[in-house]
Length: 312
Image 1 (cartoon, one colour):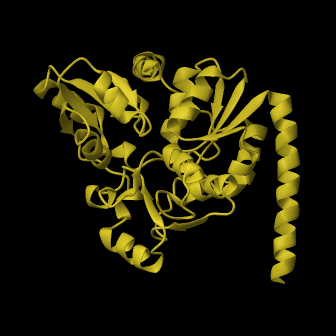
Image 2 (spheres, helix red, strand yellow):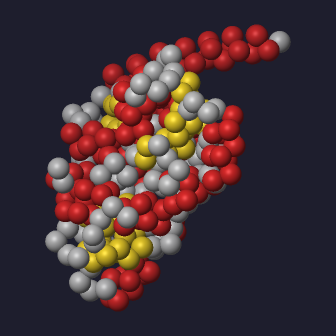
Image 3 (spheres, rainbow, N blue to C red):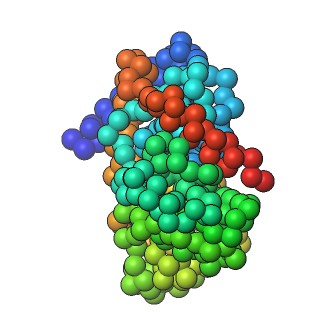
């Protein structure tokens, strides 16, 4: 029975992939998938990447339609950078708890308290918050962006763990918002120590969205893309991975002969995983749900994203 169910599932996926190819051609559509998406989505994506790479692709694509397989703020960023494109998201329930931890009123109040500070906002934030921001960043370029600003004071929004990591590597005075990623913040020192005891030859690679005491244990600390690149180039054959488990798809693709152990079974973002192949096909068939950003918000938010893309 189980074998029959697997066979049916495989056949259904083949049909969905064929339908998707047809729809992409008809609509001149492109599929962008974040590294935290399900394997079945990453398999069909035109581009896989972290927030920074996907923002660049959204800004430069010739496609008429962008299907953004990620969470809502990512679709908003694509729409802001490509306002004349139709931007679809497979499931509008794909939100980001960290992005919801900061609001415009709170940010405005903080700006009033620190009028000489530059606001640097992690891309994991709503369009409304980006519109109140001087410059955005991702985990891949956070330190570069912070060091690029002219002021000595930086208001950092919303991830306190990534903010802590940046603050330890810059001379800027950081005023850090108290947000965090529910998934990365779950990883504990105990989890890492237990995995190291189990896999003594493995290196621990960790995302700076994890807690500071966990990041401190890392043999390598970096963004999702940086972790993938490091593992690919490293002579080490075994890794304990401290980031979302969807990253395993690209890690295994790049390094099929290496071993990857996720530091805890809880490194799963339920919001990222709400998207699936069937929903990707359906959103192209119905051209819904579409991402909408109010023009006055998009205009302001675009400045903060464009400034980020200009940082080298």
